[in-house]
Image (tube, rainbow, N blue to C red):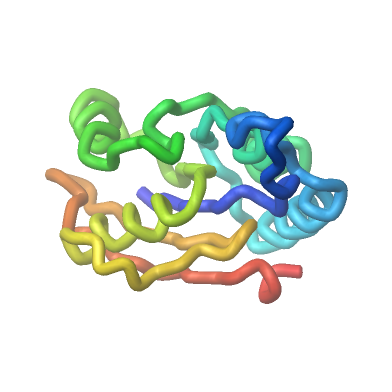
Length: 164
């Protein structure tokens, strides 16, 4: 299975009158995310499922991907919130679901979580070295059997400027 970790697009700045969870994509963020989605479509990416953080900016990013034909649908996933836990998600997703039917799965979330998750999947521990830019993508090949922790292979690390 190919797992794609996608950071949300450009969002509203933090302001006292709006909670972090309610910060939405800006017009520019929506436009750039749509352009990136179209580029991903040209690269023949078509996610079987897009799981997204419940925070507004991430969910909107996932919706833009679906609207532009890069995935058929998106579902909210609490594990992708900034407080989410990779080990809990791996246990729930990989140990309880039949992942053999999944070819390409996208996770839309936040930094530093996505970079840390990628490091744990590839190296078995977080080294605080990988950074995913807004609307950037990390592609990881997940092994067919057993836990993916420390056994996965990163094949793609792309900042958004290379997809625009």
